[in-house]
Amino acid sequence: GANPTIDIRFDEAETRKRVPVTVGGKTTALYLFLAQDDVRGTVHVDPPRGKSRLEHMGIKIELIGRIEVASERSGKSEFTSLVRELEPPGELLGARTFPFEFCNVEKQYESYDGINVRLRYVLRVTIARHYNSNVTHEQDLRVQVLQYEPEINQSIKMEVGIEDCLHIEFEYNRGKYHLRDVILGKIHFLLVRIKIKHMELAIIKRETSGAGSATFNEAETVTKFEIMDGAPVRAESIPIRLFLSGFDQLTPTMRNVNNKFSVKYFINLVLIDEEDRRYFKQQEITLWRK
Ligand SMILES: *[C@@H]1O[C@H](CO)[C@@H](O)[C@H](O)[C@H]1NC(C)=O
Ligand SMILES: *[C@@H]1O[C@H](CO)[C@@H](O)[C@H](O)[C@H]1NC(C)=O
Image (cartoon, rainbow, N blue to C red; front, side, top):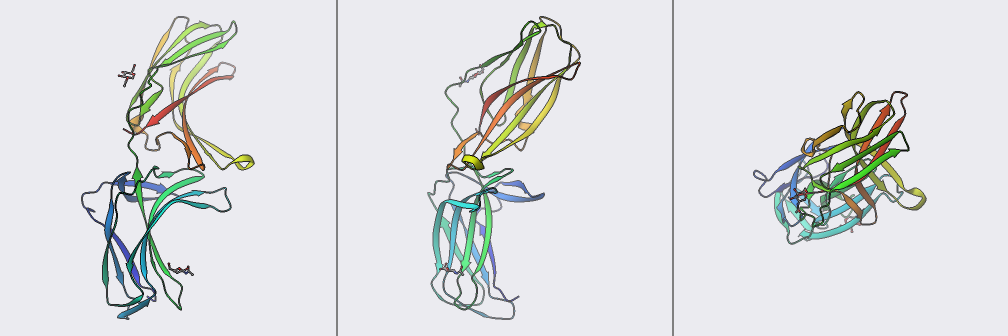
């Protein structure tokens, strides 16, 4: 009760898509905006319960783009920040509604929730007060950035070999995939003199944050599946078909976001022999949002 209540509502709230976002085990549905979408809505302010008037030193709303790096002492850095004054200093008599809009604001980065890093877009309303602490209210929104199809689109061919023991060649149809794409590939066994017990393929996500000696790398297995159980023979060829659309945690590849972090994806092929020795080969793939 002693504080006014603040509520932010988006225009087109009924029709705008919402996406579930899980942070710290808690899932909320956030409104989705594309990079070029205008952000419009209304702010509703109610004076504290039992009071009909509210004295203030001005009411404003900010659209903030913020990167939060867990390992950095400073923690948060803002890459964009815009302000709209909603009301000059004065007095509110009863509940009020203020429209706001942020038009033609390029939201250049995608929202991201990683292990050590979050990139957030937040609307923050502040009611400034003279003798009291300010009252603030924040509302997250989700931003996705659509990309053009990459021009260069070469297949990936790789070899794994251990002299005189093993020689495998594998091929993926492309090096760049959109988030609902299918990775098609083939593995050829050219020479097999060790006993392979099984073989698996994994997609690894690697998040890098910080800089210098305080660089943090986090690798996360997005998916892993067995592509073969049992020993392959020479001249055998195994097809690979992997649908990316099943994995919500995939994001576009992000290289150097505002000098703060990057997110990269790799296909990792792992062979395990009968003595449990592991052989692997990793290859970066680029993911993009169509
Ligand atoms: C309260 O808000 C005003 C206006 O935004 C700002 O100048 C002031 O620094 C804020 N005070 C505190 C204690 O954050
Ligand atoms: C990229 O390569 C794949 C596989 O070779 C092909 O099907 C697709 O049409 C190519 N796309 C472009 C834009 O070249």
